[in-house]
Amino acid sequence: MRLLVISDSHGRQSNVFDIISAHIDDSDYVICLGDCNSGDDFNSSKDYFGNKLRLVSVCGNCDWYSKEPEICEIKLFGKKIMMCHGHTLNVKMSYLRLIDEAKRRGVDIALFGHTHNPYYEYSDGLHIMNPGAANVGCYGMIDITDSGIVCIKAKLN
Image 1 (cartoon, rainbow, N blue to C red):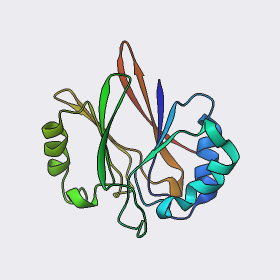
Image 2 (tube, rainbow, N blue to C red):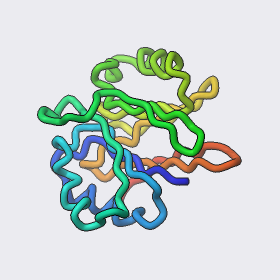
Image 3 (cartoon, one colour):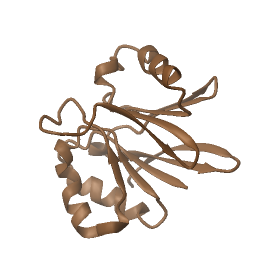
Image 4 (tube, rainbow, N blue to C red):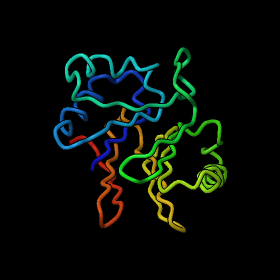
């Protein structure tokens, strides 16, 4: 199973479309970690890809009219995943609150955005990932297999 992870597109709809286009056939879900203009950056992709686009998202600090939660967890293929933009957990200052929240929830993967910097760490059974900012072409992928979890940082060519 593959998750395509996008955050912080800030109006760059063409980047979102290009990222999804490159991976729509090999991704099971697209995860948006906020600051995608209340989902507007995904509208053309939703129209174009239709039911092939299975989107799960949270609200960022720039998604003023979003009805999405600021933080949530989902379970996919037996793994618990915490999704947040990160602004409510002060990730620009430190990842400690993010890690504490992830451990409190007992998740396998903690995903966040907000800093615009790609980041990956594996510590004490927890995968922590920020895909970076889609407005400059950064994104991430997560493969969940019987052998384990692989987090991949990527960028548009």
